[in-house]
Image 1 (cartoon, one colour):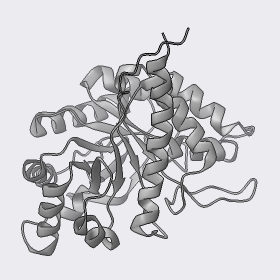
Image 2 (cartoon, rainbow, N blue to C red):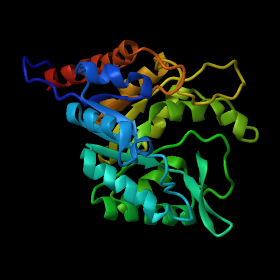
Image 3 (cartoon, rainbow, N blue to C red):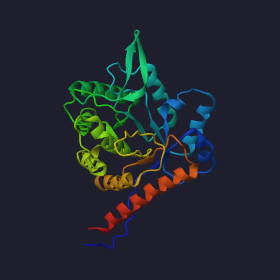
Image 4 (tube, rainbow, N blue to C red):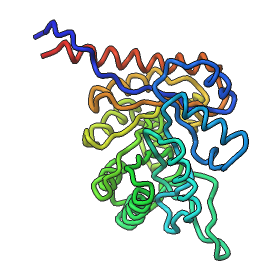
Length: 303
């Protein structure tokens, strides 16, 4: 039955990831976006030009801090200095969201904590879960807020998993109270590469894989979506999540499905390589807003 209810639909916050070539554009005029996400480690400095940039950005837009250095799955916890630098940035910018990745990055080398310089996968088992849960709880206690944990694009599959990725992340949320940052393109990249990583693995439908994965996540555990595009590859070539292209048509379709399942979850457009103009980046955000408007306008009309 269709109602004539004219209630304004609740729409998700739509943001973009800020990269250095867009600093002036973002500050010269207030863009039609709801928030800006920055890589936290780029702004750990306590003075200078980058300090002023993040101060000015935070004065003009709500901020989301996306970290890459906590290494939440590391058996060697991130050094206190790393967490304290993130805390100082949180205090300075009062972000609406703080996130990092379901990966390991830290190890002990010559009796010193050393960062790998990458986001490395973990096996999905009880040992990894306990380790990651402890690190998430430690970070949340220091920051005094819930953090989001992002699913990873993984290019190897480590032996020893006893959970699927989605089962592992759900368990993590249950143990820590954290929420998930679901990167839709990461899901689709992993699905594309599945048959190249699994012995005797068969090709799978990337959209259907992503939808089934999303269906396995409880609706209250999702705090943000990331949308990105990557370089297309020939069939049976390995796909790399390089964030160098517009969001693909398939990813937009999965995003629509995700909104229908989880509701108006904050959404970010990521673009890290082959950077576009600021105008092009904002047009990607407009596409996300258009899809969300269609999804939630329809919902308020239905009884």
